[in-house]
Length: 479
Image (spheres, rainbow, N blue to C red):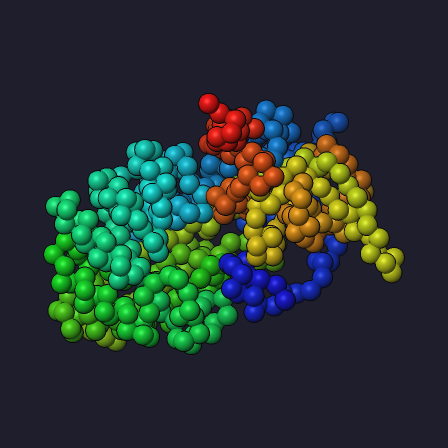
């Protein structure tokens, strides 16, 4: 029994037991599968004495490690931009216009915010810190949606001062909080109601009562969502512009979206009938999946968009509603495959598993402080030796970190060359979402740098923390 990659509450999901089958040959052991790895990831051809190391966007990982240190997050700018552009194009429809909000919680920095703006996407944030990152990077505040289940008065006032375009409201308290702050500021805030629609996308158990027990949103089944609308329309400092739902993460089809859209459109029809108000915007949230492993095959943004448009058009026709704008919030689907984490191997420890089986425990210089997802969710990743090519036989391996925790695991089950040695470099694919964003200083370890690469050049996105950065926070050590 394993937790679902989206979170521990999905522990009912059963994952295949045991390690994956060994690769067919050395080429398969070193393959950089398209879709899992960034578009700029290449292994050299091995001419002369070259050890066939891996480069990303024309920059050798050995050079990156030498210049910036390890562990290191490497972000392929062209890959990120191409995915952002694909989402923008997919929802650029004249018949059913759509908006794409990049989910900043996946990974956000000033550089990334600028890329998002340049590619024509909007941005969603869920804290004051994310909001400040965006506005100080020059992102247009009117293209920002402010999420979160417990926005403070200070955060709301900050958003109002900067002119944030959308507020996704999550509770009755938040309705009153925003209305009062907007009235003090002399503005009218555009809002969406976050609706808990009773859909859990991972299991396809579309039972309304099954997933109401959570912190996000206002219940559709319990009538809280409709009551939220009643309160909003009575407040002159708020303007209802849409309805919002989010049904999960790592979604590979539209079945859950179909049920969610049906219930949101039905609510929109009741809003029209009771208040004479047409809902202008239907935000179906994020959660579009990516390939962490070779056998995973997510839908393309265009295919997903076409299916979502068809669902919304059909549902609106059934209720006699004008078709609203559609909005989606991809985060992982844009930044996830665009980034890899490079580690240096420190210790390789063979462990006898009995019955003639051995597992190599490969310790690297990072771990749960830069990727907590394996420990939290039992998430699975693809890992490769990237500093050289090895013809050694593959061995069952487990990539572990340097922290004082038995659960400090980066890649639980994988095959790596049997001659792996200290100083080798490993890269873990698809670490762009929720790795650096959820990183910590556990065991007083500074957080890694993030470096963008493009056309053979590098750009520091986030500098590496230093021990002095951490010590500067310790009041017992500073004047």
